[in-house]
Length: 321
Length: 262
Ligand SMILES: Nc1ncnc2c1ncn2[C@@H]1O[C@H](COP(=O)(O)OP(=O)(O)OP(=O)(O)O)[C@@H](O)[C@H]1O
Ligand SMILES: [Mg+2]
Image 1: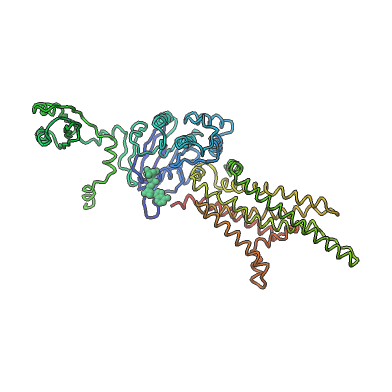
Image 2: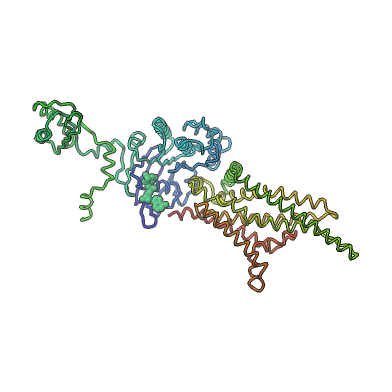
């Protein structure tokens, strides 16, 4: 449904998006994940035809976003980073205007407006002036605007920004329920959001794609090794020495961060190697009370940080190549 | 022109739900009422004096109050419009760009021409609405004069007002599309209006070839004949060209937003 090939966009000297390629299948939800300034908004603006690319191509439903902009615009719903609202209209007036410019036929207009208000839970606010709505409700009106014409492709730039936790969950459900009939791209910095809603994730940093996969695979593939967290009442040095002696323990770090002067140690081991029983035996064998022992998964947060934080040593070795 | 009507409708609601339109219309009506009244008093006094003089010299002087009124009144309306239309156009594009709603318009299946013409026609409609009451003032004198004054003078005069207004609206919209800062766009538009007005003053007061060329450029010089009820072809061409040019430039400017935002 969406095909992006070597897409680049520079603002003068600055390259915001650097030769990215990806595709999204019909009915799929793709998450765009990246830190501030990564190029998410820029990519979306190019896809919607708001900005011209400086290189590469992007196609939506087979139409080039630049050459066939009108055909593309007919098929997309777009929630920009700042919801494009007319403050002196009421919610209904606004959605009616959007439905008109999106070519919703007269006989379907009322019904579509109702549906959009229902899905985003703003029906009670229908006669309120937009400028009087709270931030979260403004965001919801923005969302309603993106789906009022029931577009094939929905592009959402940080759709859950400014919403309360309950709404965030509802909006995620809404997005999930829209998939299937609709192809969706959404951007976010919130990791649980992508793992919960998206079929696939693109992690983007400095305008470049650093990883593309399903949220599960990303976690698996990048996990690298096993990590075990140990909490025990023990002398710091003694615990470190004891843990280091366990065959298979690659890295041990001990910290006196536990409550009541307990030590917390993180033991890293090669992937697939479970050291928990050895650790337990060792600690208990020394007569130290053991409070906690559990395997830790690298969370998406950590993967994200690993991928998007530049490791200076790594960078140097790349430069010297 | 896809989207023209939707945009037009939106602009009209915008004008009428915000106080701007009412304030501008009120200021305009008060100003034009005050001017009309004082001109009428002056012109009638003057006409009386002329008549008295004429009688003393033993001859009947006919003084054409309606057409003199039309001329001076519309002359003033022209200047008032010069300074009121900027308020109608200064936000047309600047505000959309600032609020981010331009992003909605530009990513919707409507044409740039639809956006530009929809907005232009809406501001023009507002101008017409503002002008309607003043037509009644003028009709009032025309109806009460003997012998009856020819109606086509009014038609010619108001054609002039509409052309002048349309031209100012077209140029104002263009200037508004250049910046997302409403203050800058207001300053630009007022600047242009002021310049056009000064051009007229120089053209009237000066002499020689410079004044003559100024006369051609001065907008109000082309407006003059209309206020006398004369439908002047040079004027028609002059205003027509500028209106077309203003709209054309605005379209290019909107189109280039896709390119320029780099
Ligand atoms: N109009 C512009 N002119 C110049 N540079 C720009 C412009 N818009 C964005 N940039 C730059 O392009 C880069 C990417 O910006 P973009 O807005 O796409 O990031 P983002 O991933 O959406 O970030 P955020 O998470 O903060 O929304 C940034 O470095 C930004 O400074
Ligand atoms: Mg962004």
